[in-house]
Image (cartoon, rainbow, N blue to C red; front, side, top):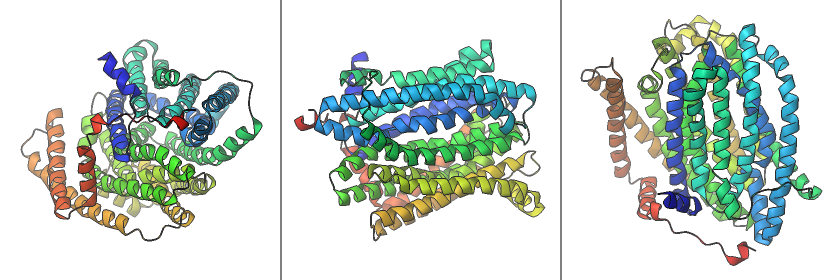
Length: 559
């Protein structure tokens, strides 16, 4: 078994769909781990402890995207491929230089942030009581180790993805969630909320360590080096800076949303974050999988001036993202209460928590297709070296999110007609703390604006003409989604009379069978429409995905 595991670690996966399915499988496994993690969190109840825990991530997350994004695979991978195509020793020196520069920068900045945390928490989380603020400070300081480990892991990912070792890359987030779960089960009972922080650090360490054997096998384990060619570092900084700004403003927007939630009812941060985590399941399985699988190929195609193939690859991934995302989003909206009750409905997580989380989850789910396409389009821009273009859309998106959040929360939700409309639509009438939904609405609205801007910019940048095939996919996906949602919704009523909804298994079977019924009818409709995506998926499966042959790089690529 161990030998088979090593073989999988060393195996290369070729083809967009094969790699995407592998990444999708492990994304699903990772999300299952995340579901277990969040269920354990929810058993604590949507209260002060969870608010503190989720708030403590904000500063480390901003630090991660602000510094670790400079060694992200979307930045490093094109440079590394170029060096590897020229000379392996040059590629090795390049990795050593980047590792040294990143490590020194992240350590110095982390020390500065360590001492600044109390002042930042006092300003942005004034809604917390003094005792809660002190715990946020302590936990935030522990979590500052996470960006360091994950940043190094990002650098390693550039190497593993270049050699198409998607297995170890895909396994990393699974181990990350495993570490958090271990922290919940073993550290938290004895150490309290601090133990949760140690669990996150453990998970980040595992995320990094799983890639080490592959890095060593290929001779690219980084070493500290004083050789830092200024010209290359300058190129990377120029390339990475727009991306860093784009990611940073997104995290800053999320930081402001959490800050606003801290001034709302106790548990509001927990409701917001748990629902955001739930919608990340389809986002990771679809958007992340296709965008990650496509990126190395996109980088290679563009570097070889194969623009037409580059565009075709993006459009193919776009079609499949749309094909998968819309039905799943509709299904999640219809089954939101069953999903939340099954996944989070344990311990102190009461019915009010369930209703608010389900409503917020439904709002987030509607934006999954937009978020997935954003990931792909950004990867496309970075593969082409056009890093300044997506940052414009990201900055605008973050600005819109913050403006929408303040406007919706402070104005629209004070209007009884608007508030009642939202509460009735999402079935949270008379549930305390429903104003947390203003933040979910603001986030999703900003995301939709972002994807429209990005798509417009992408079409202009690469002179894309007709998108008839994408429009056809959208129509088919929409038709199937309507049928899936309609059938699932009515099957819920049918199974309501069959299963005992006061039990876990009753709720689980009601949602599962209703969902499967909707998917079955929707799939039959797509087959009747002779949907192209269905045919491509069947062909990919027939290519014996699990028996994909190892691709040996050309000799010229290894010297």
